[in-house]
Amino acid sequence: MLASLLVLILAAVLGALFTPLAIRLAWAIGFLDRPNTALKTQSRPVAYLGGVAVAAGFGLALLTVKFFLMPTQGYGPWAGGLEKGRGVYAIGLGGCIALGLGLLDDRKALGPGAKFLGQILGALVLVYCGLRVRFVTSDWLGAALTVLWVVTVTNALNFVDIMDGLAASVAAASAVAFWAFAAHGGRWDDALAAAALAGACLGFLPYNWKPARVYMGDAGSHFLGFTLSAISLNLRYSHQNELAVFSPLVILALPLFDLALMIVIRTRKGIPPWKGSPDHVPLRLRALGWTVPRVALTLSLCTLGLGGLVYAVSFAGLHNTLLLWAGLAVAGVMLAAWFMSIRMPEHAPKQPGSPSRSRKKTRA
Image (cartoon, rainbow, N blue to C red; front, side):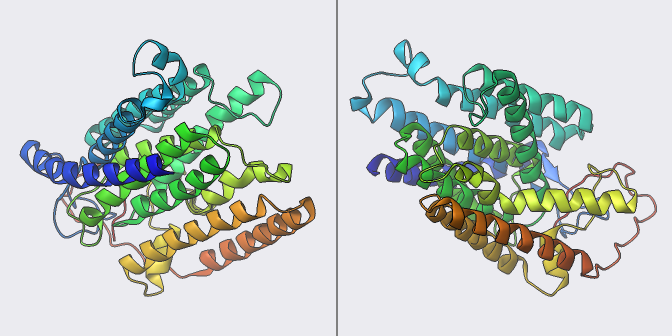
């Protein structure tokens, strides 16, 4: 518990220190998100590279606490640590792949095929190091489900990063929920990783809250999605019933729900799912008159509440768990129907002479 608190504070401090440096670097090299398409509604250019600050705060805090401030572990970062700490290294290597892939996308707008290949590569790193879905007995099926899970969550976090402060606050809330499961199950490496991720996001948030001075970009959303999916793979969820193994679906309900809804809406419109459109759940709440801070705060608190709910129900019997899952399924269908009924304002047409290349991000 003390180590988790320490890594959370250290990651928050490092995230808060690295983010202004990332802002300065982004302006110095011209790595900016410019309002040059109809989907970008900010009034001025905003610095990218916030995701690099989050990743640096997370990684440095985690490695410092795990390998240098916890002598009772009995091993350091090399030799024995390469074997005993391979889960940490797997998350670190895969996170670097996700971060680098996102940076390339922020800079050059990669196609969906290239991004999928990069996401699959990161997932295969986890599989190779032994982090995979374990509620199936087949190794091949477990590996396939792991790749599917990592790619889905990575894209879901990428989709939900469309509003100031939203992705970082939702990721922090999700990390807290995963920390609770990790700590109870004695998975201290995973508890440290979850606490470090929450702390890095909290340190970044003051600069990303509306009006944002920095965006995490695809680099940050890819990194957060990959890291959350990786942490979730190694935890014990089933305390009293086996259905609790699906708890990550509820903890990450907001990004997964938004991703599923976007696929349905865009398919009905004849738009490829990876193309940008202002139809996201947070933007539909904005259409109802909600402010950006209200949307971000409400959805992050809902994420925290759902995490607490599935944690509590993991100690319940099978009957109560079935009732919860049935209730959540019904609520999800009703919410989807309600969100789809919200009338969205038509997007302004692109002005003549503006760049033809369109990015997927929508900013409010």
